[in-house]
Length: 341
Image (cartoon, rainbow, N blue to C red):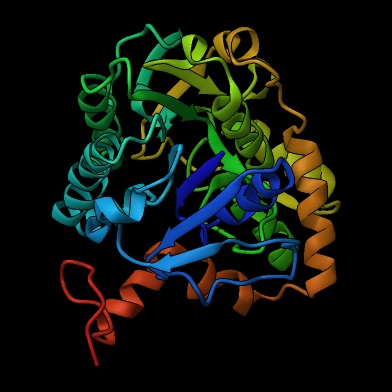
């Protein structure tokens, strides 16, 4: 299968590509290159030919001959969405819908969209794919809009699938330290302390980046009837954690680490997610990782690269800091397009 993947040079993309190549797929990548400086370690056995291109500039010609598109490349967290909300909507909502339309025009049969469990926002009790969404941020609002509008495109020739991923964690050569388990692990390693700014009571589901890659591989090869216009929560029921449980798990791996908690924070998102549909309806999918194993993996990587405070807190591994740098140095314009030199 020939697959075009957006975001091949990102945190998840560089984990996904080697898996799909090993499974025999032909991969073409698209990535605008915002995060090229965020390389933590040499851990990629295979990479793909990648177009250095903004998803807003992808053409129908770029998609010609592809059997599937996996769309991962978006502005990828809530603080970034708050900083440049108008561009977040332009890229994550309008850019994603435009890409789906072009894919359908080009005759691409499958379109797999990386959605997020953050669409549930603030939820009472357990939620599943049939539950009402309650997005609290621009990032999550865009996910719900894309799901709705791309579902309307589905027909006998165009089959979209939406993977609502839990919060990702785990080591990646293109590392991110602005997601919860990775951040807490970095704090534990560099400071020997996890100082929580909240009381740690909100619920978050977690999923390892390699398990997300596994889910994508399963969605690409599943019978169309199983995944056509379907939403799947990606994670496992065992990996619904309160944030304080995540910090305690990390502290158990990074021995001697001290934990402290703050007051109830301003981020009121809390959701426990049911993952039964993916376990039963996405052929071949199950999670291989949990939080403790992921923290142990990170500890091993930190030791190998001698992670220090400068590496941990630097712009290379934090999406907001990197884009603020590119804007401040006028390498990007206010719409996040590269400035020609």
